[in-house]
Picture 1 (cartoon, rainbow, N blue to C red):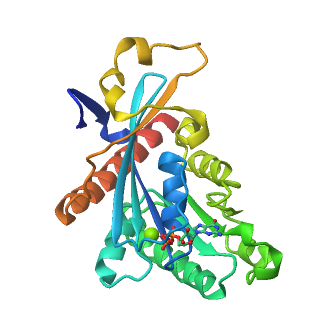
Picture 2 (cartoon, rainbow, N blue to C red):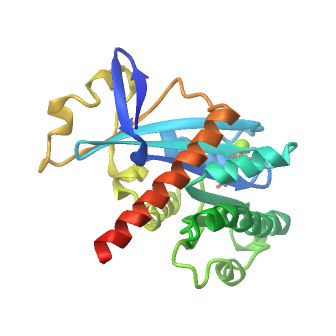
Length: 266
Ligand code: GDP
Ligand code: MG
């Protein structure tokens, strides 16, 4: 199955197997949107704008292959628990954010981590296989320094210990400290191309989108840059119905992949 994205006059085709969703969760005001903004455009805003639920899409051409990353930037307070459950179900990779100067926000991350494992284990039982769950826990606002700290690193590290698909990072979206490193590790754990990290591809703005998958651009193998990323300007959050279809297709795809792996091993 191919998804077609429109960019200017040109349609970008992304194979379904190369489409992923990153879900960002955490209490209000911890810096979720600031981290997403760093990821998408490298900027930081001091001003606080409450998020209801923001949806972004970034498309990549990495060594000639097209990839799509959808980003769900959730609100801290979830008036509709079923919507949060749906967001979790559709997520392929997760970023759980707390603020290093807020004990409460750390407690919320602990609850969220538990909820993600519970919700995802429903799918796991469906497919009768252990699911890998790439997840980064981010202690944000490290720029506030030690006097403000309410969560010791050792305690936060305990949340990820013993899980090779889980990592803990202390970051500052404001100072752009450790943010690229965090994305790099998240994509590595998810076995996604590491060129998806902000520092490792050339950013293309939409007015040059038509050239996005033309030959000269994607066939520059061996040259200095062979990865490009473009933020899709017209991305809209898919409907609940589309989300449900996405989950179903993913479960099917994972099941088929596992069957193939079994055949290869035998
Ligand atoms: P969200 O509700 O989790 O999406 O939080 P926002 O990203 O909207 O950030 C909430 C507030 O914290 C805003 O005023 C940001 O400018 C500020 N903020 C976000 N990240 C950082 C950071 O790393 N350091 C500092 N000092 N402030 C930050
Ligand atoms: Mg927000």
